[in-house]
Every structure is written in structure tokens, then in C-alpha cells.
Image (cartoon, rainbow, N blue to C red):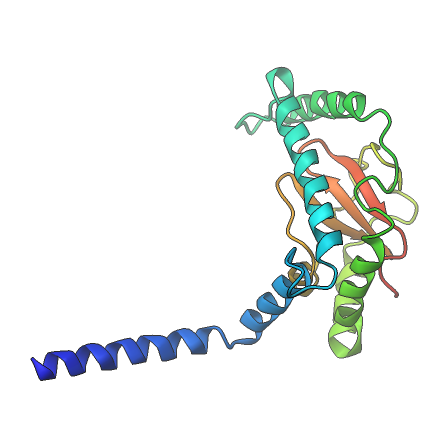
Length: 207
């Protein structure tokens, strides 16, 4: 009985040590730091109120998207490019009509924009920052090709820039179908289901 009990204790301690080790990797530390900086809990994040308001706005947009993505606007499981394009076009038209009065700053308000700039700035410094900027340049659309206009379609044929993982880790998580995209120095909030620019932050990063 004593041997069995000793075995259980050793097993638990080993498991705990393994868990602690897993939580102490650079990726885990980055995740934990990102969660702290984007938390809506005021006890751990001084920007919690702005983060909570931003989360409320993006959740409301996602709810609107899902409400309108029905009928001809529903993106069905298909490999036919024509059907996909037709459904996306119908959905975009519905969202544009529903958000006819939408304007720059509705989601990225004056309060949240400086918070995003502060979150991004440390990730763009030093050797890592230089690598990130090179990635952004490699994926960049043609200069002037992307309209910085709310409710505008992201231009067909232009690349969708990849957002490096270290930047995504430091930004608030988004509900589907919203995604971040960086074009030049600017941060876009893109609806990937409709192909619409939802909002943007000019000069979000320094190159």
C-alpha cells in the first residue's frame, strides 16, 4: 500500500513538473503575456475597459454577419469558384446595406487605436522586428491598391498579407470571420467571408 501511494505521489509530481516545463516555453510565455495585455479584467490590464468595449463591438459585427449569411448569401461547402464568388458578393451587398452609415473608427475607436499601437510597437524592434517587416513587405499588395474605406471590397487579385505569429499573439483575438491584415503601415480589420474592409488603423506600425 505504501509503495502504491509513493508511486502515485511521484507520478503526480512528475506530471506537474512536465506541465510547468510546457508552460515555460517562449511560445507559452508569449501567449500568457498576450492574454494579460488584451485581458478585459481591470485587475491585470490597465486597458481592460477599452479591450472590453472593442470585444463587444467585434462580437456585434460577427453576430450581424452570421445573421445576414443566409439564403443566396450563405457560403456553402463547394469548390466552384463561381458559386463562392456569387455568395460572397451577395453577402457583401447585404452587409454594406445594413452598415450604410458605418464609418472609420466605429470598431477601432479613438480609445483603442493607441492601445493597438502600443501592443504592436515592441514586436517591431530589434532583429525580430526587422524580420517581421521583411515578411510584411514580401506579402504586400501593390501600393495604393487597397482602399482604406469602411465597407469597401478588398480588391480581387491582390495578396492578403500574412500577419506574423508574434503580432497575432499580442493582439486581441477576433471572432470569425474577422481577421487582422497589415498593409504597409496600416492595420486592417477584414471580413474574410464577405471580403469587406470593416475598419482600419492608419499608421499602426512604424517601418
